Image (cartoon, rainbow, N blue to C red):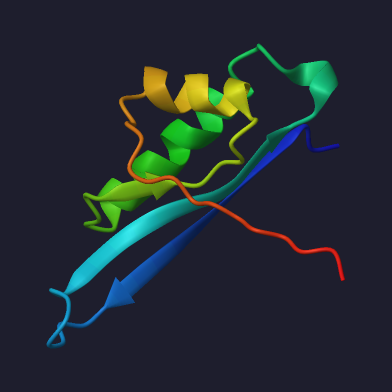
Amino acid sequence: MPVGYLLALVHEVPENPFVRARRWCEIDQLAVDPNWRRRGIGRALLLNALSTATAEGISHVEATSWSFNDGAHAVFRRLGFVPKSTRFELTSEA
């Protein structure tokens, strides 16, 4: 029975008049069963993803996380990630 998972995506954007060519890995989803947290599982999953990215010649890795997910933020920071941007949402009740 799995106790955690990580979804990593590789993105590649060719150069165009607006951006330079770019290839990076995005850690899009990371989850660990609440009963198994604080045992290094999330860290192990991230380290495996980082190792795989490096083996594929990818030196730039980004991670996406919900703003309220302080646990994930702490793991990312301990591994050297720094905040890059803030995404805002506006919802309207119709």
